[in-house]
Picture 1 (cartoon, rainbow, N blue to C red):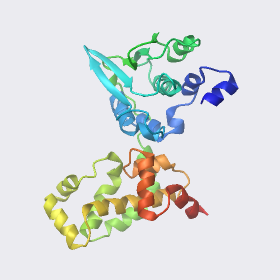
Picture 2 (picture 1 turned 135 degrees about the vertical axis):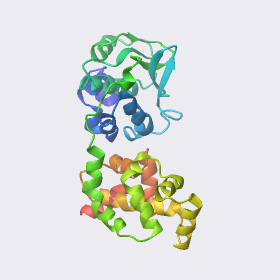
Picture 3 (picture 1 turned 180 degrees about the vertical axis):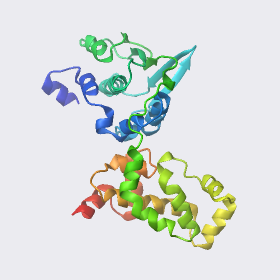
Picture 4 (picture 1 turned 120 degrees about the vertical axis):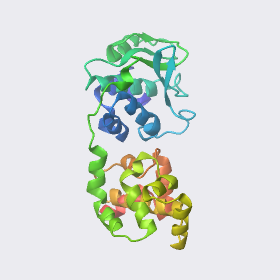
Length: 285
């Protein structure tokens, strides 16, 4: 980012990039946000899967973005740890969020933007891009939102994830439907909603109408356990997705239940002995 900023002689490059290129154009996180019912749902996806948008260690302690309510006011706070040294990370994120919402809403949900670093020489570009009052030298970098904006509708891309699931994994699901085992039934119930994050044994047992202990006993009788069944499903689904070129690695990570690309890569290498990228190269060669 620093090199390109210098090469283009545009100190506000991050702001301009975030305004011109939507998050949904480059990341599954943007697609998920646009598929959400409301802005509140979209920010839930951002907090959960934000690291799929930018894979970098140590940006924040815990979730990078938080919604905070204070005395009837609503803030989306960026906890980026290196903000003063690398403000571009926050600039591009806020430009994505503000300008992205303007593409499908008749008014911006953002009232004001605050930043922790001193006012830069190109400060007017902030106001031009974000189209709201801007404050520098603040105690935190945050977007102040309209108090009711979390209920505003989004729903721009509702069928995206389900389309991928149908395109890349239908054959596997057909195999699971014919499986007459406890492990097969668990996989069948998990597969369509693995990306939603609730892969708990208790949830699946409830769907099967049995206790968690009974489920564990059935799986033990088949020579396996719940964790192994979940990982086997994730591995099988990941292989299906990776055999197609239209699904990015971040998208595959999301679809098989990982909120971070690095965690998915480590798990896939543990399952198969190779990275997802190497598996894809071999599959399509």
